[in-house]
Length: 309
Ligand code: CP
Image 1 (tube, rainbow, N blue to C red):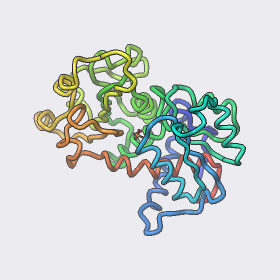
Image 2: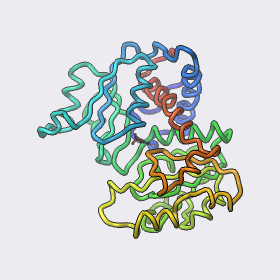
Image 3: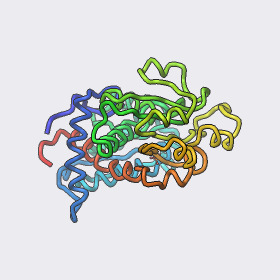
């Protein structure tokens, strides 16, 4: 298996297209492992990984932990609530104390953009960014693109619409970097207040009419409104948002074409997506979650520098 050009996974912007393709090839192999009766390989048997979560998570935390267990790594789970962070300990002191216990890799989610980059400049272990504020969520973008490749045969040349709160979304930014590197056409859509002015400089189209975005795309990645990161009110009400920017079955029926429906989760049913769309045959939301384990196994394995699966 080829090596990655990076020591850490801090963001998609630091990866090459070849890195992404190496991760996908490795994830193909691990997906095959996950479909065996015994879903475990000894690849990281002598590796210790700490999962540091300074922010809430369901999918990413469980997915990383499962990926580590499937690779036979030893894992430690840390959440900031109930830790000495609450007594004023700094991020570097917390991590150095954990590393003193001979930890090899760190998976970190943190509310501050750039926290994983900062950490990588101060410690020797490999760092994997599991989401840093509004900045990047690289493994989510990798599993999203891997799922598009699986369902549509390839990513290159496909038209992908990212719909919703682009301004506050790390998933949007990582997806834009990943999809563009793989040769997809990318459009962002949503209310003007939730689409940043700079976004066109990243080579994406902008559309404020969700119907037009859906008519254009092969796949729609629908994002929730990140209310926890909104310091002011960006739209009148959730009801109005659902009416003008939500994706519902009536709208999709009127458009009348096959569109792959994606969502990174957590879903706010009835706001950005209705249940009849989230649970429809065109929805691959749970396939994305399944693929997340294979992608995270691939990333952990490749960053460990091991040669044999
Ligand atoms: N998609 C995602 O990051 O979900 P969690 O916040 O539950 O990890």
